[in-house]
Image (cartoon, rainbow, N blue to C red; front, top):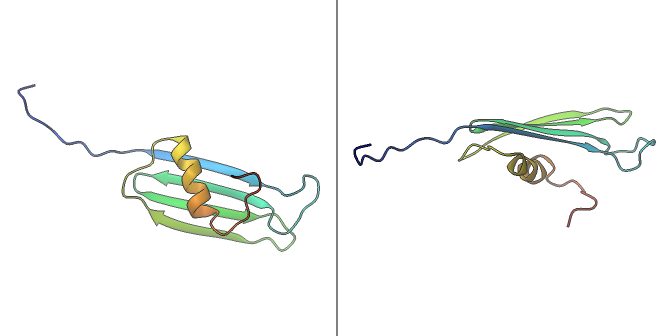
Length: 91
């Protein structure tokens, strides 16, 4: 190197998912699956209900900096995908 500083853009992807079941073996309203997939700056949340009147929702959001780890993905899944949901056992 000749003393030049080069700037590189951070790239990456991450994913997380959760099975959200209140009581195993008994389907209750709100039970379902939540997943987060991020590629570069774009993220997509999928929320799939397993109750009798199944409902699926998808939402998207953009990141200023790409997600590159599972811990980042889990944090974003809770903050963005599960916003407004009751999360038992979370402190």
